[in-house]
Length: 385
Ligand SMILES: [Ca+2]
Ligand SMILES: [Ca+2]
Image (cartoon, rainbow, N blue to C red):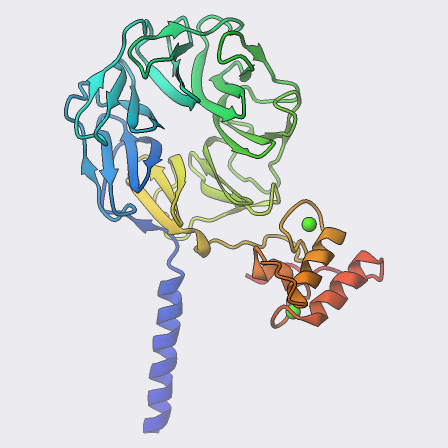
């Protein structure tokens, strides 16, 4: 009996360990409790911008945070951007502030900036762009690190409110409230609306992966363009909350932060979405960032949450997409063959390569995949999570 009790105890300890290893989100010891609008990282520094609380800095991957607001005379921080050793903060009412010492001190840099509600910032080469809200000019450019600004809004409807920018090569995109997406291919000199099939024009956020541009909207979920905004298609399978505030990418995992629905994950380039909210105590998410090996979520009432990237499921839906790219096809077979024959292929997701959903990844999975691809009638099982 004693031995049995010991075994039970060991089993219980093991189960506890497994449970704690899959704890999901962890609330960090930090900024609380006002709306978190933005993150930015610079080397090992992680900054967060919060309504009425200015900027907080973590030098230990989010474990602890310190307010860095000296000289930041407006603490309603909606946007952050890094350019070399320059850190910029966009504020609602106070324009743009610059810190050259990792947030230790700030100076207003608003010469020529005539709209002071700065809700988006972007760095493209040596150009800095500011997007504004409730003004007349919408977009400003600085070519001298914020020392001077000029309007760069030709082609943008007057009074347009800007939520976010995306930089993709030499393309600059502006996501706006009510007017969708604008594209500039000449560093902001001119803009054109690129909203074909974008059925929701309240664009809150962008994410860029190669030639894929994702746009998060407030009310229409997520859209994808693979032709620089020329056309869009909704990628909302199983996305049960369509008010998207923020997007973040980690390899082929796309994360969406939502108002009221927490965080969703689409693994493998636009697969179906799943909510990944284990232990996330606040489902109103205003900002996301992938930093180091973690995903951070900024919430409205409960501060910053952190979750290791390897804690997220990488296989969603059916198994078999071995390379986690596109559909299940011959490229997946090649990848699996290479992996199984020591060809050096590194599986991006073990559970995805476990085609039959049984045991380890081995020759039985190869047989299953061959059968599926040759029309032998094999049915790919659902991921075992
Ligand atoms: Ca594939
Ligand atoms: Ca297997």
